[in-house]
Length: 351
Image (tube, rainbow, N blue to C red):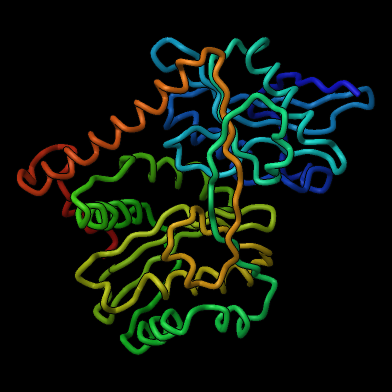
């Protein structure tokens, strides 16, 4: 059976209607998310239909960016603060053959020089025999169909104590609906990175554009933790769609972390997810501290292929140089607080 991709108008598909036919679809494949990435990454969305003789059997979502004159197809690409994109296939369609068709589409029809893709349902066995490289993306998933009692019991005893301590300390969690939330979150995020003499990997405008594109869809949960005096001491961002909630970002002021607002935020998000009828909470990355919330570790291949072998080495070098730059700016922020990229803003909107 021959599969091939045909490009479609990027933002023309009604994804909500198709979730019954293509139940794998993630929020990162929706028109709102593609518009968010297009705006923040200066990228062109690509949506393509996977076809065979019986018609459309799947879709691909990604974006094209230009780096040093080369066209790169990301689905997603490093640094986009975006998880699984890739494919949404009808049941029974072999992923291996869909990936093969995608590579042909990317290199021959789109004229790209490099491709990266992370698909939640792509297995390591699907890659056997394919001429691709991959990294292993790790995350933790929590089954929200369990009772609240079971979810709470699955956490470590230390985590449960932190949640109880937050309640005793008067920490209150509320849903945020105001534009000032972006300022609060980003100021706290800078404080988190400053602890390690670093700066955030993205600017405040990305948070603002995320809210602008996703909040009107009803698929973005914004949580704010306040102390007894009403001060915002922690924030969390949780997009959700098609039964799955994701942890996009969280931050808190270091001087208030002894009140345990971060654990309270996570627990509140899980409870709201259950109320919304969501089935799964993906904590977005395998950072060790997330293990305490009782999820199961998952591993997903993040594949890549370059038309020219040297491009993969250039990609790895660029990642290392970006890390060095981030460290240098973080150190500048410690000794020269007025540096434009390292300064921690004092805005406190919404307080």
